Image (cartoon, rainbow, N blue to C red; front, side, top):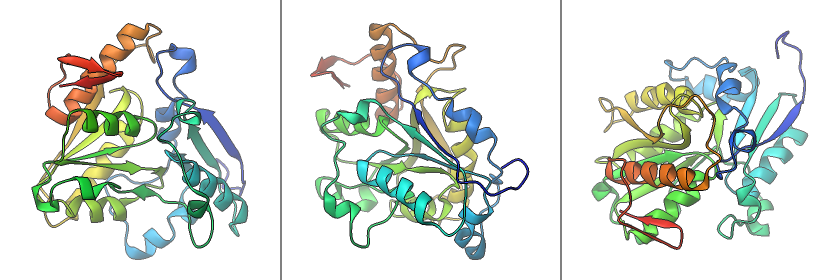
Length: 267
């Protein structure tokens, strides 16, 4: 990467906040993203979009489904060019009952999805009545889905940025414009000064500038407060922080839940 030499180096790094302390929580996503050579303020032309993977210095993915993880590795093997891949992997999702894929999602004409839009639209209000569009990456998606179900929220959509670099500008543009009246929120479980926020924030803004309905809008952050330490090792503190940023994502205010049912906060 440094000397423009082709390499298929693949790194599989465990990452995910489970209350186990700093040594067992972060693969330091932010440090890898800092080394990516994508310009955050320029929306790629169609030609540039088609060549994103050839032109980038490395790929970073944080998959939320077994199928997408499979396709990321399969793509890495079968491409006719070499490019480094850093794959962040959640230990929690190894046994999570919601993190499942069928064989049909790994066969036929299926492929890696850089961006996964809302998958349960049939349970939500019409697109023009959606109030919030939450973007996220990795295991925090399932915490958001469970919180939405527990609180019977039907006017918030949740989309996943599966590929952090090269950034899926075109997909973010397309699916944010689908919900014209929605506030755009980036939610992450890492502290403000860590995780993907510093990388995705300006790139989401660049994507929004190209939309029809969100050209003058900002993206709001919902996540842990800035911290010197990567993560707490105290389970109670960990859960309090998680409940607070989940509330912030859905309501705009970080606060204690009125109740916790089955490990899921009630706002």
